Image 1 (cartoon, one colour):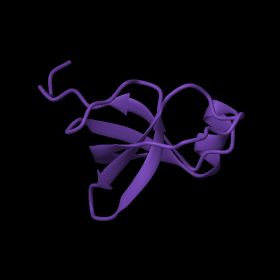
Image 2 (cartoon, one colour):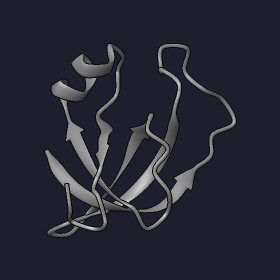
Image 3 (cartoon, helix red, strand yellow):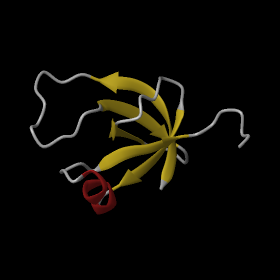
Length: 79
């Protein structure tokens, strides 16, 4: 798992039938780089998000995705 900051939303004119509900978001990853991930949680721009990638993401949602948001990091740092 990795943490990244949401920097924007991705809009597509068509959606693949196997994708579950959710938005596509762009994230700047801690340590550098960026990626596009499927978000089913409703993260907003500026939110820090927990991301899984590769076969783990595909297995988690049961569809052909390479990255998926699986949590939102609490900005207060409290539990």
